[in-house]
Length: 328
Ligand code: UT7
Image (cartoon, rainbow, N blue to C red; front, side, top):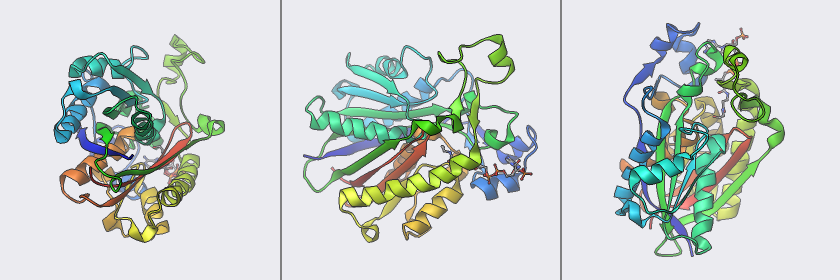
């Protein structure tokens, strides 16, 4: 049997932070940000809107598209590095806010690869007979862990959420054809939130040193991202049997337009076949793929029989891909 995505949903906070706004906060320029990253603006959640609020809106949109109700869902899994709390999990908060049954609900941490890891888990649960419908959510509010004095990172990130309802496919032609996931923990220090966990509990010193904000060695991460996203894409072709020529849509993690351009060139795709949202939403971490996917499904670019490849790379390091033939 195959599993498939029955519905997608996304939700972005209303508030827009432009490059011009950032010029007033740090020593940067609209020109640098646009040419080095492809970002023009990003969305920011307000202080009183935690990740679970964005997630519930995306989840509800995905359920509506799937024609399902919260009580139909058997498992809720949430990929996030910006949960509302360390515990209880954001998934449990969402279970309650959605009004789902008292089903297994949990968070996991796979950085920007969260949605890919989530789809793989959903696929496995359903194939194992443990669930019929799994709600996969990716939600991030990276602006809440941003160091607003570090121009190398603060211009990059935005908030948002995306979701997918995964369930059994009606036939063997449509749905998830292949999943590929990998990790290398030896490089974890290059992209890390250092304080607040058991390795470095919160203290006055950690707050004074800004250690509760995201640290990224951008240039090193860039090189690994380029390499591993290409590897993930090639694995996707190999495992799914879809050839490069047969691919209709690439939905990559949106970290930097230069990474996306490079990947498209390596896969011999025109940029017309790539779903890009980075200019308006920045890097929304795990949420970037389901947000882009939802946009392309809703505007009709991705339609029945489209061959779709999703590719991600993120903190951990983690990376991977999901290859699908769209349809139920
Ligand atoms: O989502 C998870 C995975 N994340 C990624 O894949 C992100 C990967 N990394 C990147 O996208 C890029 O490395 C960045 C966008 C973060 C940085 O771009 P870069 O081309 O790698 O720049 P750099 O860090 O090598 O810095 C080049 C120069 C430096 O100045 P000097 O030392 O050459 O004088 C920086 O200080 O650009 C400077 N710079 C800036 N200038 C204006 C760095 N950030 C800014 C800025 N505005 N915001």
